[in-house]
Length: 116
Image (tube, rainbow, N blue to C red; front, side, top):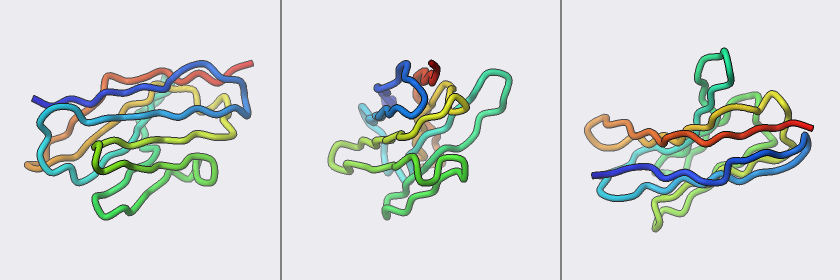
């Protein structure tokens, strides 16, 4: 019944910015946490940033000071503002929601490429 709809990926030059959006669509009960993970070619998927229902945020050390995660609770949407992008940020970015019943919802992934 529920799904995560992602948008905002693309190609940018080093130092540029992108904003990713993730909206929970349909019936998803009690979302406790939402955020973003990423997977670069040949590497394991890693946490980028998450936000809880209470508004607490968590960031990977590699993105602190450059990325900002925010939310619009009324729209069940989170936004990842990515500034000062580096080539090592290149990856497929996946939105994730943790909902009631320990159900995980994953978006299909959106490509972010940082290159000259």
